Image (tube, rainbow, N blue to C red):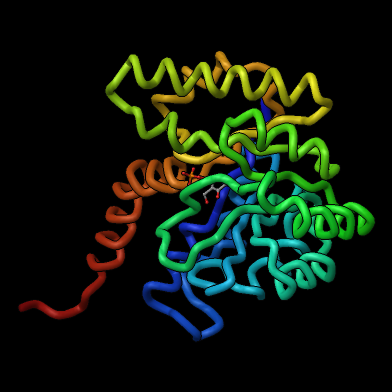
Length: 248
Ligand code: PXP
């Protein structure tokens, strides 16, 4: 069965918009993660960025302690964060490229160009018992490099596919790239995850990509939660407002 990891970063984005540097605030990503688990999510994904723009260190340590499924830490290959991962011991690490100016992870990791830097990190993390995945574009040379440096998983970047939206020809071309990439990865002994931009509509196309173990989905799920939860939240506030004791 295809598994779902829910990326909770954007709940922290919302919290930080109001409570930056305060050490508390709502929504609480840990509470949200526990609700995702109650709903049946197979894992929780969080990206601890170097600039700590959304998820904070305290969040990942609290997630490690409280969640009962698997913790997948997305991170850049930089010494500070690698050390933190070794201390945290998430079940999985997904190494992603990171640029400070980007809104979200924009491209795949250049494994081929960074084999020298990535090899010792993958080794160190694996020796600590952490499963390592590399977030890459569906390109044969990146897949081959990922197999060479000893990663157990790749996560195929589905962003280019998701961006094709209403253009069926482009969507088909991007799907073919994903299908071929997943097949090649499988042939080379890699396990395959996928993520970025997957939503309630384009998920149906993803069914055509073979060998997938898990999808990591964030933005569309958090957006949908706002949509389907807003009526209830407004009703609850109206109920409270009813008890205002003064007349005009
Ligand atoms: N997988 C990886 C490696 C990511 O960087 C992201 C975005 O943070 C996702 C999955 C989830 O993408 P989205 O929020 O578009 O579902």
